[in-house]
Image 1 (cartoon, rainbow, N blue to C red):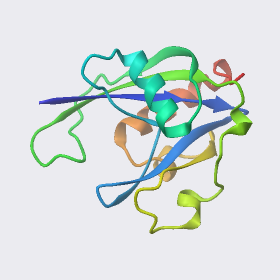
Image 2 (cartoon, rainbow, N blue to C red):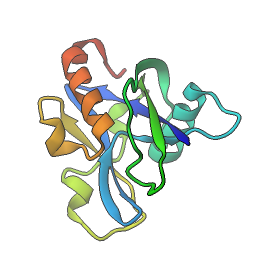
Image 3 (cartoon, helix red, strand yellow):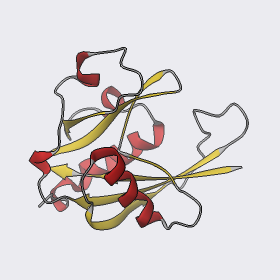
Length: 151
């Protein structure tokens, strides 16, 4: 079995936008995005996810990375391979995105709430992100951060 996920990478002024979420009772910090729905393309998926989660339109969407190794889903007990596709994007006003400063806004019991924050790209992936594939992508972003800009 497979699950296909599309994630958005928004870099602005040396920082990247991450999402703090409660997923199946666990605190997860990841890149914004989610599951591909039947009948939609990968770019359509990430544009929809950005609109639904962040409330902004993703512009200049470009493929960045697709997993090239096996990753078991962290959220399925039965065998489920995750294929994650990452896209860079820009937005009209990155400073207009509502963000918090501390992980989970300093609140650790707000289940169902999704919060966003900017994290400097020089932070260590394992100190920021929960999911293994996101950590790989973080390191790739760090290597080419100067090439990705928000409008």
